[in-house]
Image 1 (cartoon, rainbow, N blue to C red):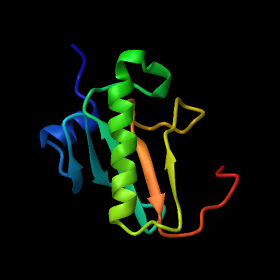
Image 2: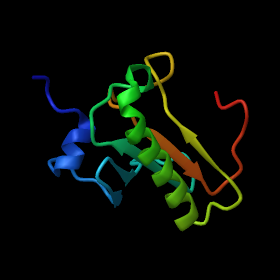
Image 3: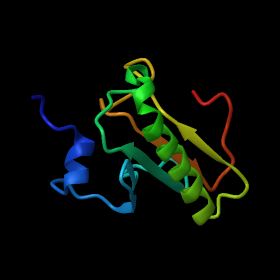
Image 4: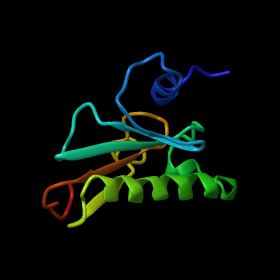
Length: 114
């Protein structure tokens, strides 16, 4: 069995984090290096490596993550708009091999993003 990912350790409580929500299939925490006035990470409990590793069986997990993003955006006054990003692989700047989404808002986002 492989070692737990950073996000599994956070979910288990062995690494501290500021939780914004905890649900059966996913959870949300504040990003420790925010890139916007509001920056949360939405993480599936199941350690899926990235969007490149999802299967049709993971559909309920993805729906739960997207619904949580929508709820957090509403609860945090991001009515002017928000961005949801998931990085995949080294060239996509993925730094943790556990699927997660960055929910950013509270300022005008630029395009292209990088």
